Image (cartoon, rainbow, N blue to C red; front, side, top):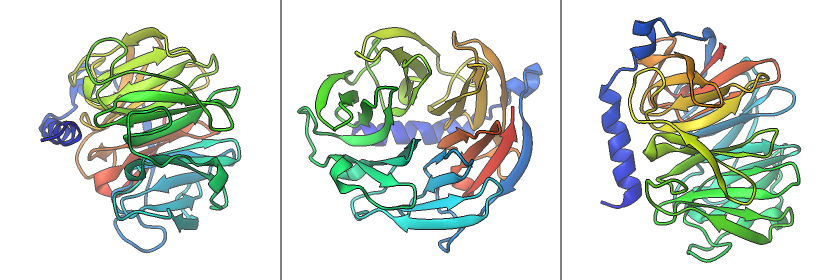
Length: 309
C-alpha cells in the first residue's frame, strides 16, 4: 500500500469515532443557515465534491469527483459550469480564487491550471505538468495560493510531500518539506492559506496539525495533535480565517468544523457524523464569504451546508 492509499484508509477508519467532544463539553459554536444541493450528475447537483472557494460577490465555486467546476449563488442556485481539460487519470482536489483567477490543483496531471472566473482556461499561466522530484515538477498537487506579491505556492503529496514557490510569472524560486512527521515535514499537505501577514498556513492533514511558514519556507510555529476532543484534530483538510483572525478548520476525519485562536486554542466546533442537517460525512473543504457565512463542503453527503460562526 502506498502512502496516499494508507492515508486515505486511515482517514476512513477514523470515521467510526463521532466528534461529540464539543457537544459534550458545551464547547459548541456555529449556527446552521441552509443546506443545498444533492447527489447527481446534472447541472446544480454534486457528486462527491472535493474543493471550494468563493469570489468577491460571494458566489461559490466547487469542483467534484466528475472534474466539473460549478458556480453557485450563496443560496445554492446554479449559475454556470465547465469541465477540466483532462480527467481520465483522476480529478482535481483543490481550487483557490485569487483576484480574477481560479487556481485549480489538477492533482493527477501534476500541475496547476489557471482560469478566468468565467471558465476560460489561461493556458500560459499553467505551472507544471511533469511528474518528478525536480524544481517545477510535481507529485499529486493538492492546492495553490498566492501571496501579496503575486508569488505562487503549490502543495503536493504522495512521494513528495512538499511545497514549491514560484514567481508571479511561474518561474521556480524554492521548495521546502519532505515526507515525515518532524517539524517542517508533511504527510499530505492538503490545503494552504496565506494570511494578511503573508504567512503560509499548511493543513498537514495526516499529521493532524497546522504548520505556519514565512515566504522563504522557514517554520514559524505549529500546533495540533490527533484526536476528537476539543482542541485536537482529525485530518484537517481546509482552512479559512474570519475578520478577527480566528482560524476555521474543517476536519475530514472528525466530521466537524473547529475554530481556533492563531495560537491553537480551541474556541468551539460545529457538526457531528451523520446525514441529517448539521451532520457531516467526510467533509473536504470550506470557504468563508464576504458576508461572514461559512460554506462547508459535505463531501459524502453530496451537498453544501452554510453556517454562521
